[in-house]
Length: 590
Image 1 (tube, one colour):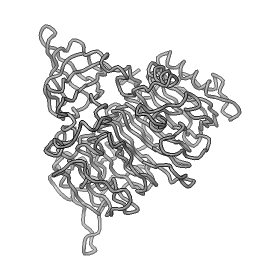
Image 2 (image 1 turned 30 degrees about the vertical axis):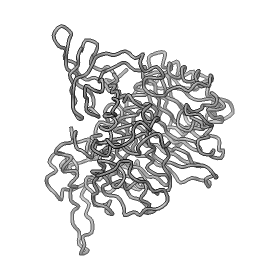
Image 3 (image 1 turned 120 degrees about the vertical axis):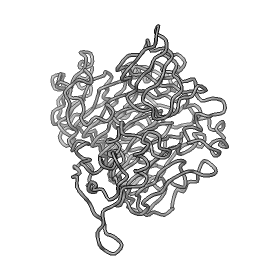
Image 4 (image 1 turned 90 degrees about the vertical axis):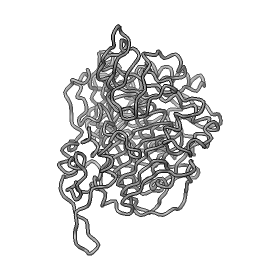
């Protein structure tokens, strides 16, 4: 089952309807000012936005139509190569499709022995149903209304398998154990007593079966397993072809040999840094500041390269005699391709594709939050080595970590919520996760005070992860946690946040920001600047339409010396930035 399947909606207005004529006008010909625009986002994400004109008070008390952003007009002229704003219009599953795949129903968990009354462990029955669906080629496994006690993790290890409840208010999975109990202590490759359950794994875990087996065996043997797209033995992955020189934003590239590539194939673009670290400099925007930076001292950061970007091939034209050729990709290139970085398309771990979780609440037994980096693994939903997968209408409660993307790309989290006693990472995105979309999300205010020694981050991104989007969010606590490891080209747009979290990241993990971070239309309820106003911190960045804020608590300094080439627009006037949602507007640019 694949792209040709019947589709289902996301329970919201479709994106192109949402844009109406307002943002489409800005995208197609943004030279004009005073274009009508969409109304402000609702206070609770998930409610539809109604297209229409919105006026804001003028200085004399009269009304005036808000003007189209000057930065947006620049972007519309060169959307794929703008120096500060990344193109993220293809983020999410199936390049940001409005609807999720609608797999046929193949099983009901009650047919496999699940009770749904909380009296017995229903995890074996649910996992049997999911495995049977996968072994038959995929399909939807339904969970009727009820409370299902689970004393084990729920695993989706086959592609095209969907676990669907009756709605987050009607179907509950009640988790009684953590991942340390179920699998074992998961230590850090950097030593010490850190628990890697602080940033990996889920009590609902979407991960290819082969990768799951390797991972769990390594944990039980106390051997740290690399979590990226190619595993511990990167050099064993087969080269399909070398790739010719190209520019960031190109959709088609020349290849040395097109004979091993085909339409619909998922490949990995692999770029290796050179001894002068020109690839890392390019990710940071280049220039004297990046050239002066001590990259060799950042040993954790340098362990993250080669940069690995999974992408689907949409067209192949072969050269004569099987040599040469041209390949078109599903998304524009995230970086330049230069010969000195040994560019090539390679194979990768067999990914999980076309799978999802829908319409349920995962509630862990309520325990106090663990001290920082000692999480036991009461974790929510994790996507690992997943591509074109999704979660929709899913709530997690009383978890250590909420929704995780670990070497996961092109996935969509829609209408998700983190609730309960407070989480270390409500949302985390790491190990080279790219092109993901987190939309209509909520982080609720914690229900109990934070225990001493714990940490709260918020919406996290790290580890060279790129082109990810957080859109239409309500954060009653937390922050925009850019966690070192130099993530780059990520967008946070149309979010209201009580900015009370802190970022993390080891000193040896390198810069907080690479180039082209964009914060667009952000309302800060408590005036705290840290990690929201980034024009004095992040290189080649944009801070547009955020509330007036001031520095207090955690205060950062730039990682790079010299001019940052950052842009600030509509500061103190989030209601005045147009388009209101940068991602939605970019959907009209193609």
